[in-house]
Structures are given as structure tokens and as C-alpha cells.
Image (cartoon, rainbow, N blue to C red; front, top):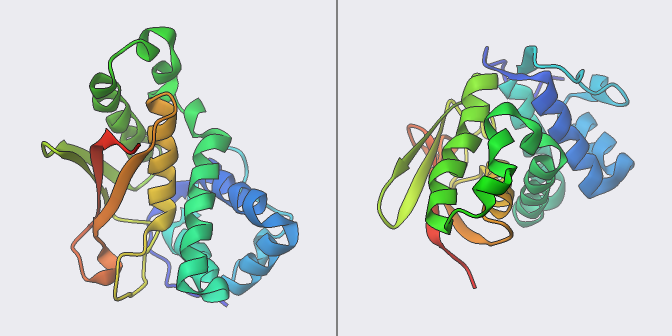
Length: 210
């Protein structure tokens, strides 16, 4: 049974596949299968989206995966699992995408941290804008960068009393870790469409933690 009405917005199969593999890495095969069943996506059990860039994975199905994690493990457990799956998704495959290719180069690695963030965060956003129907925009607000997803696949079709786009937060956190050469940064979701916002926006603070 479909959990969330189809959006008409699509992720490429490859991005959806990476996220499903990330959930499997975090939860194991049986855990993933339980989530796919609960999300109304049992057709994906042992049948992941193909490893290509065709835009065929609806935002509603991506959102249903995140809903199922929260439904099965509660708000707190679901949050932790989405964060971990988002981090694992970046680590599993996103550095191989075109816009991030130069970010791993030696010339990039010797840049000062502010320059790495200034180049690296928009490069991450560009992956999603270029390969999917998720338009991602980055703005420099002084103390932090804003990273906006519109439309947002993480919470598509859901309603909540608080921001819930933890999978996206996990991707961004791991992306920052990779771009910065191992540092951690504070990322807050400051606007969420599921909680009544117009768009979903994260604040990425420029100063590393610790």
C-alpha cells in the first residue's frame, strides 16, 4: 500500500539505491526489509533501483522510507537511524559524483578551511540540483551558510510538529566531514516544509565543533 501520494518529482535511481544500501549498512538486511515493507515498498526487497542516473524514484517513496524509520523506532530512534543512513549514503557513493570530483584533489586539500567550505558546500548542493528534481541552493549568511532544498524529498507529503529532515542532515554532515578533511560542524534544520515552512532549510555553521 502506498503511504504517500506520488509527487511527480524524481530522484535518479542511483541516489535512491545508495540510500537504500546505506539503510541496509546501518540496520542489516532484515531491518531494511522490515522498513521496505512498512513503507509500502516491498517490491524493492532484493530488487534495488538500478545503478543509473534515470530519474525514476519518486520523492514520495524516499519520504516513505524516512517515515517508516520513525514509525518503527519512534521519533528519537528514527532520527538517529536517518542521520546514520544519511552519513553512510554520502560515504557510500556521493563523492564519486561529478560536482564533487575536484573536491578530493590535492590542490583542494591544501586550501584553508573557509575556502574549502565555500567551494565544497555548493558542490554538494549541485549534485542534487543537477541529477534530481531537488533544487538545492546555498547562501552565505555570515556566521553560517543556508542550504535550502526545494522541493524536499526527505519529508515530502508528511506533517510534523518539528523539523524532520534528518537524512538530509546526515548527508550534509558527512559531506562537511569529507570536504573539511575530518572536521565536524553544527548543522540545524531551521525551516521544514513538513512543519509548516515554505521550504526545507539547514543552517551550516562555519566554525567546526571541538
